[in-house]
Length: 604
Image 1 (cartoon, helix red, strand yellow):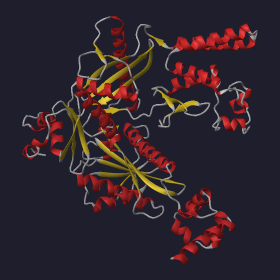
Image 2 (cartoon, rainbow, N blue to C red; image 1 turned 180 degrees about the vertical axis):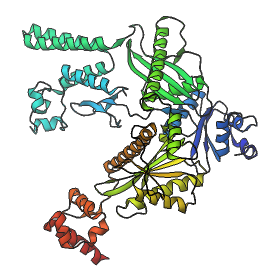
Image 3 (tube, rainbow, N blue to C red; image 1 turned 90 degrees about the horizontal axis):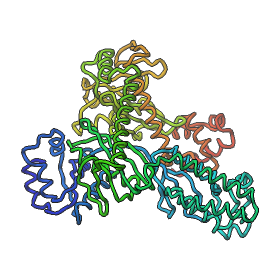
Image 4 (cartoon, rainbow, N blue to C red; image 1 turned 135 degrees about the vertical axis):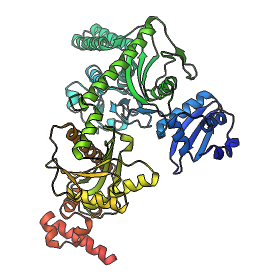
């Protein structure tokens, strides 16, 4: 959008607080921003003094502007954070964090179960977390199992079902891990007392738990049940050991979030310490990518909003290293100069430094154990493959199928020797019937570069086709049809011999197996394979793939997949004689399949 075009619509923008959204010609959301004054803020993007190349590139792509008015700057901040987290626009700050964090859930049911989950379902259950460490969650659950007996079975333990005697106790009851509520050996009130202690434990309130066990031990001792009293005493010892493993900072500090940041170029590293009841209960360091030359203050404010939302923080005080604009009702911003809060901030900064040094160490190892820089590896690939330029942009394609059925293709993108996951793609095969690796590869390559061509995007210098000459030639046909010859170099990577093929060459190129260039090429190949398999697994788990053979009454998924694996497509199965089908699945099932297709033909 030009300045002249913007002037024609600027009067429609209000002088009010809110958020604004920029879209490109295809309706893709490019950027979400917040503003005290929407018109004034948006107008600043269209002045003649833009010095930032990234901002200039953003403005050039803007085709449409939308806005939402809110009541306050704080509401604008929260809405901006929410929209960025949901849509992850190309030009907004990017938190490099694709993990799904675990929760501990107390199910909304009679005699509630307590277990680890990564899915938060709005069913009335109570969720604690999320936790940054799976090992910590498992430690918590192990401790609960050792101290508080609970059921783990999925039985529908309503009072009515228990009264009817529908259930029998299992091994967990005999091992002492469950008190047998399924047979009425434990009342709901007693079970809920245990759940109350678990809630205290998960909230970090250990004093009520200690007191509960001490009262229980005293009651057993007074009734001369010394063995039971000894067991409770053992639980108290467990609880003391668990408490000693917690990172106790100060009993005087509670409900505190601590943040520190270090910025290097367009990359920032932010550490978060969450404190409850004097202990550090969460710690997380994130890599953050600035997109439009945002200041360190802007990056930290944005990240604070995202992390507090992710980890459900309700702390009323936030400790940071410098002043910043962060408005949240009832929340105090503190910049400590000395004392316990300053020590916490120093600890957070120490975590940032450690994270950066570990990342650099891992990068050196990924630079394949020798400390060779990515740039040198890419130069080596250029020389080894005799390319015309250094392949700073590499893409790799692979086909994936399941037991000879359900073909899909995957593509990964590496930029400057590192994965660019936002550019990864997957392709559901649209034009190919049955299993045809060559046609599937051609379709994926054609669709990928037709899209880049239409959008005016840069092409990769090197394209790796995971497969032999057949797949490589099929990919090359797609490039010819798009008239993109010379725009990129295509090579095929044979799976067995680890050798490279160029289009039209009779002889393969075998790089030294331990060379840095070959290691990076294999890493890219492994990445596309994993990406394809993960996509395939997800599609299968969602039940997205449809196998017509499974619709035949009397034919299960195992038989259907065996037929597809043998005959490659449903159409080929339809063409087989009864004898051919019987060789694969036996005469009885062959008759069922043949009868089904005969009936279908009669209908046609």
